Image 1 (tube, one colour):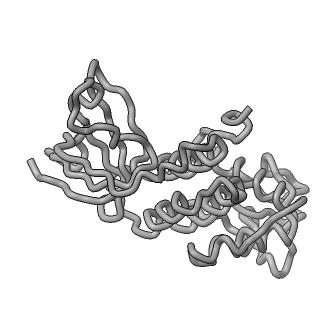
Image 2 (image 1 turned 90 degrees about the vertical axis):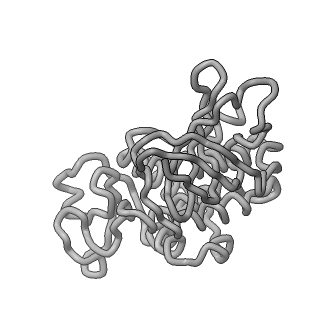
Image 3 (image 1 turned 30 degrees about the vertical axis):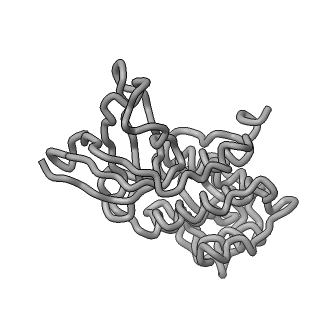
Length: 249
């Protein structure tokens, strides 16, 4: 039974059986892995309060095969990011980040770029900041590390270059912009997406993680981008991310 050692972010921690927990961790060298923490819900447990989501941990687990559920032998907290849990709005932003990574990744598919983005995203969350914008920028940027990156250089229906025919619409189902002519013919649900909104999304995808905070979005651009990204995520995974209204109302 091989021993796996890695550092990672806890994405989810679920009750299992009478006293255990199943913990999902995203790591740079193994991707998404899952393991059982035996006795984690007993009053006296060696795991303490280490198994909460958002924490950065050093993990050791035994796993018979890459496809099987591992058994956690040791887990040590490196960083708790405790400030996340002190504010509901910040917690919602963090929840959106980890749930997105969990939803768009498969087990044992390492993606160091996505891991770095997640760690930086959680570190950047502060109550005094625009955390909804931080979560939106994360959502856009992390798609660039997957096969789900939206297409903006040409119409996703006819293939005509965007520079030759300015995009007018965004299709969540097709995963990219749709030119005016294809939009007129109908390709399912379409959302308005101005040139300014497209430029904002492209900048968010291309900028390095430390420089993402330079981007600002207000007014119609913010509304268009938020609507497009929410609809696209739902089209990709079939579920919605937790909303700020649900958590703070």
